[in-house]
Length: 435
View 1: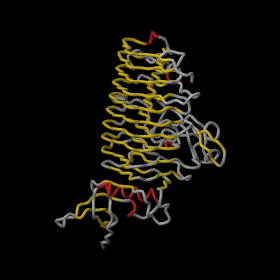
View 2: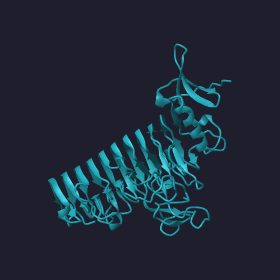
View 3: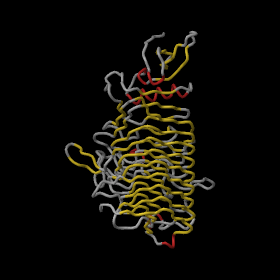
View 4: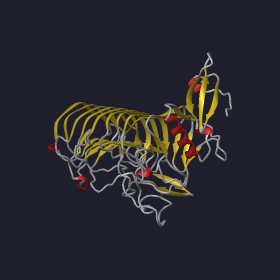
């Protein structure tokens, strides 16, 4: 049985289209002049169920036929809110998925203890994560992903709910009492050839975007709006670990461009830390994959291009942070264009922090584990502009402005003996207002 409904879709430049039902698959098509019908995309509005069930049905239908899934602005599901899409669980992204978010508002419900979306190859009880490829999340126009009004859980796996960070699951029997990877907004693990672009993410429950062992990808035009707290039922509650974008073990060959806004924690972070006890698919880790380093697997973070970062940490952490430890290396990193927007009276700890001497992570990394960093065009108003808290070798730092009366543009937190072959060019300081 076929039913036809004509409509205009300005984004695709299509003048006349029709929904065609084929079994359980509703595919929006373009009728061409010669009478041929060309399949265009799948809409969740053509399926029954909860909002997330309809979206996941659309993804399964589209990925099997090489089509896009478009989540439009208006939700036409029975009993749905017409101006938003409400998620009780995560959108699951399969191989060969292009998910277009067309001027839509996606929000987590108070029942949801899960991601906005994650790669479908990982999750609870999946110890062996198989690689997938060709996953693309494309925002069109104004797209908002927003956390729950009353989150069940927030923070990373080191935070206890109700004590250090908010969560309505605090004290609930049978529920994990710490945060974990389910609090991450967009989570991709072992995905190659991917893109995430043109999104605003507000009030994330932990890191807004996290990539684990992903490669050959692009993240661009992302704006974050999180503050490290949320007013819930009239009470200001703490929400910890609200990083913006995090790259974890094994990420490589990724372009990051035009990241802006404010976050409760670091705005952009490359964190490569070894934790042998972590188990893939458990609810006790901030990584969904195992953090231990398997023999023969290259878990170094390398070949990362970062451009046009503009923002600050409302929680007064770091704008950009590079951290590797436990024998994992970080190298071939280009950072070009970093503007620190720390507000007066609330400076971040550092505009850019490299490494850490914290003994929890093994202390300062050996010279050579963090190398070949090209860092340029940095404007800082934080307590430190560039804080080298670990080791750094064979790198270049150029065109740095510190706009503050006190302090130095480069701070050697662990001592200059941990810095080797680092060339400084046009590193300047101008007298500004104290922050």
